[in-house]
Length: 402
Image 1 (cartoon, rainbow, N blue to C red):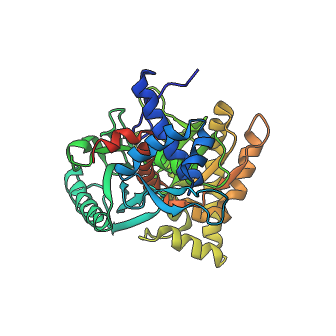
Image 2 (image 1 turned 120 degrees about the vertical axis):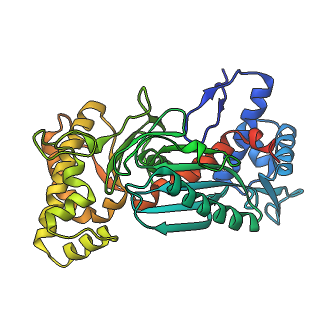
Image 3 (image 1 turned 180 degrees about the vertical axis):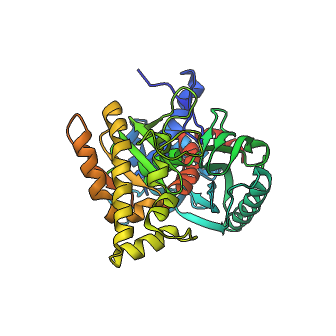
């Protein structure tokens, strides 16, 4: 029996569609796109062989995708073959682009990624956003978005959608930030402030970081716990290749798991939360350093130079991460833990105590811990690639826009 088609959504929230003739056509268009993206350049005959359809059926689908600007023909597949060579197909580098944006505590960033997965335009603004209301922050972000879209359009691309990563709890409507303690935002409808012509969706930065790891990481398993750590600490659980979001979409708030119930107050209203021991600003305080824009660089430089205060603060942060992760690992049994975000740059001084604490406290076998090669780029790339994946998952919906 053929599996039901799912309607694509940039943040991975999908709705099953009826298995009608139209639904099967949309599914087959998606199969062609994914096959060419993963294995191309390929001829029509090669695509037909891989997905189990006739060459005539595949040719009809391919022609539709070429007209929509989603695929392009590169010329003869392989010269010298017996018989008439097929025309090689590839996903278009001059078609839809995913626009990803990130609101950080101390920066704003935007990028455009084409269907091949190549980043084609990028803009960033450094500056504190904590304590500012959403309106001016999103106005500045919109300026960067317009800049990136203009650069992408000058290269023959068109924006297929916008996905925005934020460090906070996002409602299932994909637009409302219910609470972002490190920005001091509550019930902020970012969907009403972002450009309506793209259209926008909003999600937690840890979720986008986990999706980036799933799609772009090397040998990433289908089940893993991704930890995104900087000033705040978030996490996202990937199960069977998809996000486990929780009833309200708030799953993954690892930074507000208490590691010492009688510890200092946290911005969330609790006490002794992980962020008070392993967040960037907490580590700086423990090391006796003043906050700096390049917090991770300052810590890494001093640790590499042998500063024992910094090394001790990082060991303690690793231990606190290990305590918090123990509960998640014991409860959820992920195949592995991946450390991403800014703190991945401090892994050489964090991992030993983190792994030691995790191994000592975990009920089952030790859970492997690795470091994301994407580092702090994960949330931004995950946001942009989520739009690209939506095009690949349902190209018919985007073909209709052109």
